[in-house]
Image (cartoon, rainbow, N blue to C red; front, side, top):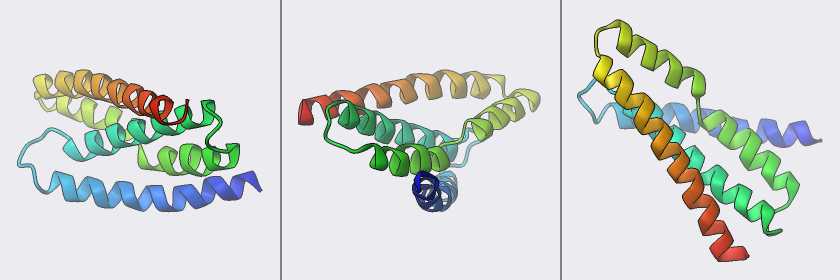
Length: 124
């Protein structure tokens, strides 16, 4: 039964990643991967909020599987982040590659922390 929750969450997260990535990237005339950056930071915020809610006892483990593992797992993409960073470096856009790594780490961790702190403020 648990795997059905993961599949259901992923069935929403994967298309949302694709649609969000395309919509965001089409609005930026740059080589920087804004679409991937956006989905990864958004997913980090949601996962931080969910993790905090689970820790506070406000959310069930089933919802954690549905949203955390399924939805957030399909929404976010470490492999695309890595690939896009490598392509930036190989094409000579080393500044953008470095900026992608630094900004993604800082914003992703910041979003996860913010989500977790918000959950604790709401439910602890």
